[in-house]
Image 1 (tube, rainbow, N blue to C red):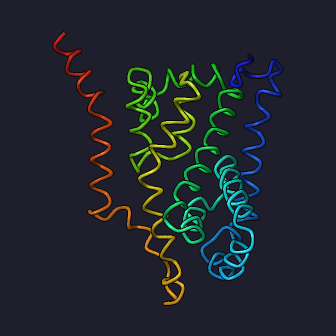
Image 2: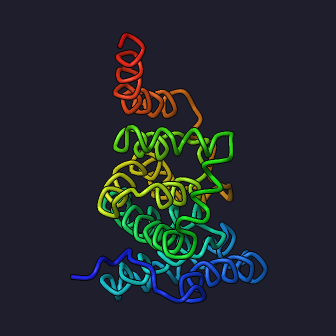
Length: 242
């Protein structure tokens, strides 16, 4: 069986997925920003709910597919998509649809980076410093712990968390599992906010997207970060003693 992460032989074919991502990201930033916005969701909420009620399975499929494309092509509107998942499908199963779409999109970026950049960018990262270099070193030494950690820490950009594992030889299955589980806490918060948008719309307000940084939300997430980092810390201490 052929490994699905094996890059095509021709250099142009290897870079084609990344070229498509870059072009789509630019076009999306220019042409789709007004359509993937809170205002668009507010103005079309009744039509969306009516379509969902009449075509529930189709709505789920279209929603997950749209979320996949938003993430895979770095289009604007990922946060709005998460809110929409909560608005249309409630906190549960909405969070599962959100996480599924985001994970599939992340896998797309992961494969595009592995096919298109491969050893060339990996060699450059070896010579670079800063946060990306530290993340890479941590992943190589403690794959599971570091993969969960970069998903849980709000300061790590989602694109970086998709790109770096692709360049350090993380297996696709491990990347997919850690992404699905690692983004669950944050997705759960924003999906629950989306589930309450009906009342927000009725009051003519906008949702509080900073809720994830409130103590009652942020502290449990930081606790999960510490739990993910514990094996790394233990290994570092044992290395010093040795």
